Length: 311
Image 1: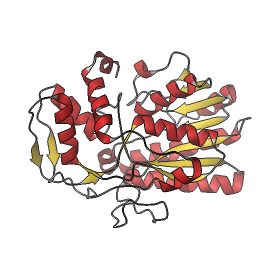
Image 2 (image 1 turned 180 degrees about the vertical axis):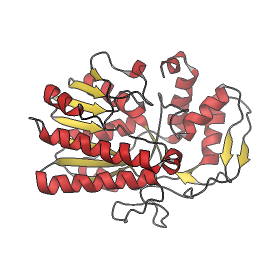
Image 3 (image 1 turned 120 degrees about the horizontal axis):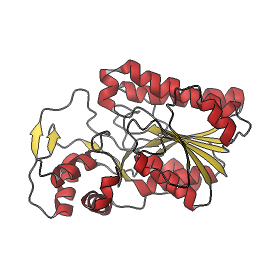
Image 4 (image 1 turned 90 degrees about the horizontal axis):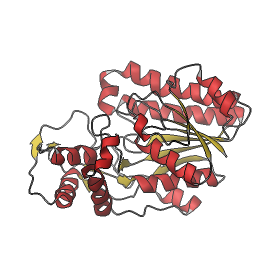
């Protein structure tokens, strides 16, 4: 199958490209390298250095004729979305609509798989783990933009027959995550430890998130490709883990006695976030397999190895 990935040089996108190529698919990648790294590019993939807002994207679709699209390219930094909501809107909404329209206008038309967010899209809710039936109430421009694209997918499905799946990820972590470009606490803490810097925990550290390992996310994406189902699906573990607990896991993985410091809480930060994976499990049989301690150990070992010089 011909498959196109936007953001295919980034953390999740590059792993996905590797997986799809291993499965025998022909993969083309669109990435402007704003946060992705060319060193993550799989040598068997076709590469286009383009911004998703660029109208030349349509020419890529005409040439590659993808039968499926994985749309991961985005402005992913929550803090940056708050500082510059206009930029976030331009990239995440206008850029996404440009990609969707280009896919619909191309000769081939298959499934569109969108990387959304489960970490911030629901906002503050007392229903934990949170199922997809809870009405989203994002409290940041990043979450608002992701929800808006989901609504566009419903529109294009109803009026143009687009087949789609929107995957609402928990807090994804693993090898290749960029501690300087993404808000991944595991990547940031791991880098801090290896650079002999004291990790900073904002607030009391008891805020929780649903941390999910990259391998589980890849499996969820391939299930969406191989199963003829549509709609919105959480991709998480259904388990809450506090930031303090994450620090203890990284401390154990490092074998050091490093200490942490606390700073004031971040404005508008959600106290608890955890998403239910029951819907996707029921539809495909997918379920998370990597326990948090194991995943953090694998991640820390990658950051410690020479491989991390590639990102």
